[in-house]
Length: 225
Ligand code: 5RP
Image 1 (cartoon, helix red, strand yellow):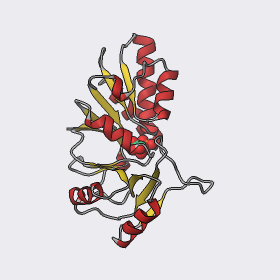
Image 2 (spheres, protein in one colour; image 1 turned 135 degrees about the vertical axis):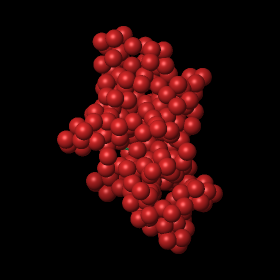
Image 3 (tube, protein in one colour; image 1 turned 45 degrees about the vertical axis):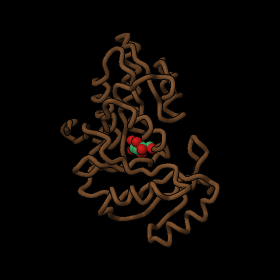
Image 4 (tube, helix red, strand yellow; image 1 turned 120 degrees about the horizontal axis):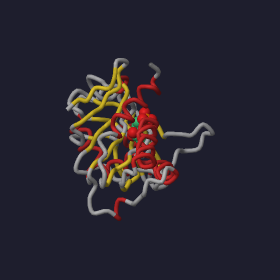
């Protein structure tokens, strides 16, 4: 099976967790795109009634195109379930997100959700976090100074750039700095340090956020709880 086929498989599986009447947080990324397609199909074919709370402009546009009613996170009084992708997940279900530069909105939606499910292909599962660079969303003002502080702390920062060399900008017009760490031995300690850095809007460590992960393997999706 190709990676895309695995992503589609877990996306479709996750869409079956959505029930009529739910307010559903919609993550961002190529795996979630398959899940939103599957939800759109259920809306069209079964008359499924849901409200989608998107975590990026991209996902909002896809939802609208599929006639999924879309509301902003501040327009709903609760979110029943959020389904999102991830860049890396360890054996304790701690994760790195932000490969798609959407982790700020994704974290806001996730922590306001009653339940969170992550959907990934098997390549995202790891014994320890860190081989995937850790994204930080940072305020442009002072970001060069922040970069220098992170470099002095041996955190190997890199501003994320587009193919044309321009800096990547998030939906909030912030920058992304990726930390090339190799291994993260103490995710909670690192999160604590990053939370204290002025100019870091949000880091991509998602700790104790999910309790269900659907992993795509060649022989089918596995639900880990
Ligand atoms: C976006 C994210 C994505 O969920 C993560 O990057 C996984 O994306 P994909 O499904 O395309 O591999 O965190 O900020």
